[in-house]
Image (tube, rainbow over all chains, first blue to last red; front, top):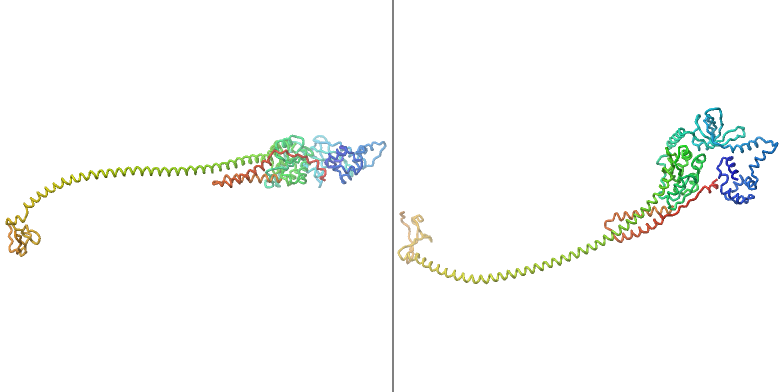
Length: 491
Length: 68
């Protein structure tokens, strides 16, 4: 059954699962459907598939190994084929001759949606004519030039109308780091010029990524590195298993990006990861097809593709790139870890701040209380001091009064003593004065025959104070007389 | 998605509360208490959201065959 699928896939040039899914194959082999109705019950088989493969599958289930029967039929002795019939048989057989062939490109003929070319050995004359569909050619990301050394993957096939045998190429790879490097640089320049790597094209990833579309291989370290480092924050990881190296990788990676965009458009980010490798092993990530798919993705793409020298073009086209699958995981995890720390520190801060506020308020109350009681104490103190002062002053006043009283008492005594002495002195002085006065009394002089001459009220003592014809009074002992000056004689 | 939005909003609000406390000089205790209550609710919600939760891991390729 699986062989049949492989052959059918090759014949139709599609992926295995496009023919029929693994799950369906398992279901068919366990349930062994015998007719159309039973076969249609198998998940993944619908009318369309039945029309295409129904009879073949039923034949296989019945144990009639269709293809073998087909091949067996040619072994009949004496069998004569028709041309087309024989070529079908031959092409079926030729699928088994799938191979990788290395050679130097000797001619290239690009015609619309397919290309003819041929490769030959560097030495010797062997040559293979090749045929490749344009989409396979584009996927390879190799621009064929004469003289280029390549490895082609595919199988031989006879083109029935012409009867010519050619090699049906599914993938072309460059040989040698030098050529790979050149192809890488050329493609990089071309896509850069188109602006596919421009920062303004890049979408920002949500801060807290939760729904993840993971594209990588289920083999290899990348998936483990990513899953074990991304943390446990309840992510929903939709894993798209894709080869990450070799022939099928390009198609699968491209389909992964496309499929996630079409089927789970609400995922937060597509994570494309792969461990490091040589330029050759990372070829799939340096193809135009993948770069374009990534740059067209509606979902932001985070690339964690390891590399030894040059950053892969897929990573350059991604919205964000880091250098390893682990780094991609940490990129997603970090905001969550930080959020936890943020919450915890906010919690501490808020509680501390609130306690601080309470403590401050408590302090304010205590402080007010302290100030108030201090003020009261001061009031009492002042009052006490005022009382003290008053008391002191009262004592002083009393002392002063007593002093004054004593003073007055003693002063009275002194005074009367002094007064007595003063008075007797006074009496004596008066007595002697009276005697002196009596001695010098002008009246007494008048009695003795002296007289006083007045000019007006003034006593005349000199002839200079008088002139002729002035009238003067002369006082004698017993009366006054008025005379006129008639002669003045100076002595 | 809603959970994520809530977390973003919660953290933003929490940050605002912290800033509120930082900017207060004369604090109204009643208001501060209100903020603390609000903060506590946000912290609880955020912590619940940030608890270790097992991731769901699902391979999608199996669903592919219907994609035609």
